[in-house]
Length: 518
Image (cartoon, rainbow, N blue to C red; front, side):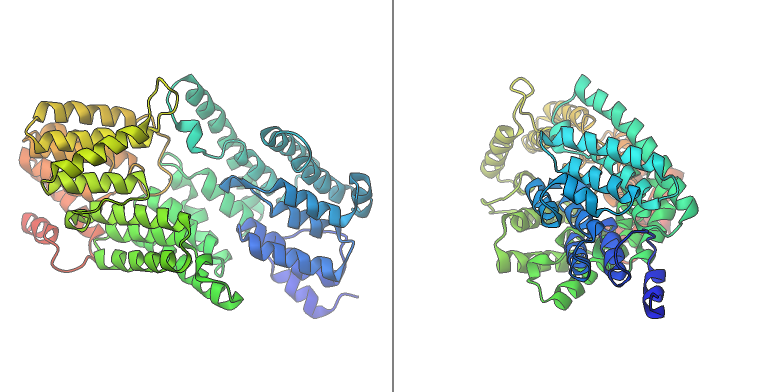
C-alpha cells in the first residue's frame, strides 16, 4: 500500500505521469519532470538521480535525466552525456527497453534513444520529433506526450542567428515552415491546457511559441497563469516577461524579471552555489524594462549587479552581457558622457554606443574608429558573412556622423538603408536588437531636420514593431506637436507619462509632457 503522505505529495504535482517505478520514487520523478518543463535542468538531474537511487531499474528516471541533456529552445545539446546516462541503465538499447515495463514507457525510451543515437544532430532531432508524433497519437490523453511532442516540433525551427544572417528565398521558406509548425504546436498545447489549465509544460511552451509581435496577445492568459504554477522557478517567473515585453506592458514585465532574479538569488543561496549561477538573463531584461519606465536609477542598480558578477567570475558571457547592458543604458538615457573616452568594448552593441556617444559629443576621431570597426564586423552580402543587425548599426552610425558634419542628405540616405536592412531581421525576441531601433533613430533625425511628417511615419513604424517603447512614444508626440496635431500629441504624451508614472524625479521629459497636457 502507498503511504497516504506519499499520495498527498504526488497529488500536489500539476504533472500526471503514470509509470512503473516504485511508489517511493514517484515524488522525485514528478519533481524532475516538472523541472524539465520549467527548464530547471540542474534541478531535474538532481531529482531524477534521486529517483534512480530509490529504484535502480526505474527506466523513466534515466529517460528524464537524459532529456535534461537536450535543452531544446536554448539550442544546447550534449549528446555524449545523454548516451552515457542511457548506458548507466543498461549497455544496449534492447536491454534498456526490457527495463521499460509498459508499451508506453518503451515508446518514450525509444524516442530518447533516437534523439541521442548516431548521425548528424539535425537528422536526429527530426527523427525524434517523428517518434514523439507517434507517441502523441497513440496516447492522446497523455499531457506529457503531447507537451513534449509540441516542444520537439518547436525545436525544429528554434531561432538561430545564422538562419537570419541574410535575406532571400531561404529565409522566406524557413519562415513559411516555421509558421506551419508554430500553428501545429500551438494547437497541441491549447488542447492540453483545455484539459489541464495548470500544466507547466503547456503553459511554458505556448509562451515560447507565441513569442512574437503578431501572436503575443494570444499568450497573455498563459503568461498570467505560468508564474503562479511555478512560483519558485526563476525561469518560470521570467517567461511571462516575454509576452509582456512584446506588448509593451513595462510594469508587468519588470515585476516578472525582478521576481525571477530574486528567485535565482534564493536558489543559489539555498544550494550553496557561486554567484555566477544567478539568472543574469532576467537581470538584463529588468534593466531594459526599467529604462522604459524612466527608472534610470533602478537600471543603474541592475548594471552594478552585473558588474559584480563579472568581477567575481571574469566569464566572457557575463562580460558580453554587461557590455550590452551598458550600451542600452547609455543609449536609452542619452548619457553619452559615460562612454566619451571609451576605447574598449566587448560587443558590437557597445561599439555602436561608443560611436553614437562620440558623434553626439563632437569626437570625430573616435566616431570614425567605431564606424570602421562596425563596418568590418558587419561583413557583406557578397561574401555570405553579413551580420544584418551589425550592418544596421553601421548605417545608423554613418548617418549620425553625416549629421554631425552637416551632410543632411547623406544622413537621410544612410537611415533609409538602415531601416530597409532592419526589415530583413526576424521578429523581435526580447529587447531590441540592434540596440537602437532604426525607425526610431530615423524619426529622431528627421525631427532634427525639421521634417515632422516623415518623422511621425517612422515613429509609427517603430511602435508597430516594438509596441509602447517610451522614446518612440515621445518622438511621436513631438512630431505630432510640430505638425499642430494636438490630439495625437496629447494621446502619445499621455501614454508616455503612463509608462513613466514611476520615473525618477527631475528627468526633463516629464515637465515637457506635463506642460503640453496642462
